[in-house]
Length: 117
Image (cartoon, rainbow, N blue to C red; front, side, top):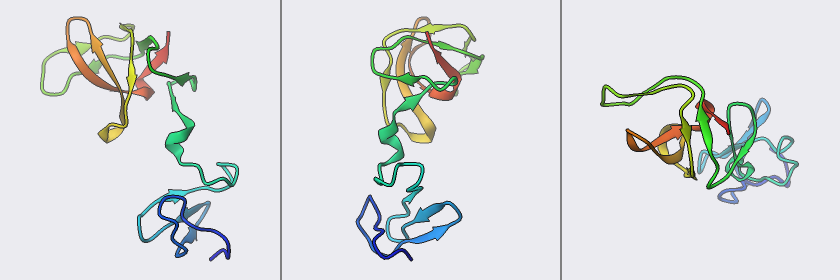
């Protein structure tokens, strides 16, 4: 255990190292101090990136890079579909983009399936 290292989320002193990551057993937070410059910043603070690594922000336009099936429906979002005015959200299952798609309606997308337009 490192003498001065504390969990950046809950400030617990009971942290341990597992390979490159540090883990807090109290809140289950995992982080890599070297990759974050030692500041202990959360990974979500680094921003949402598209499939090519470009930073996304609210109001951007993106293009879907592959056909995506809409869960619970027979609809498909075709690759090449342009989506305007996205909102970044902290959604479940990695769906971090909220948007409206013409002909389909409101839905959430994963940033790994879009590129900045």
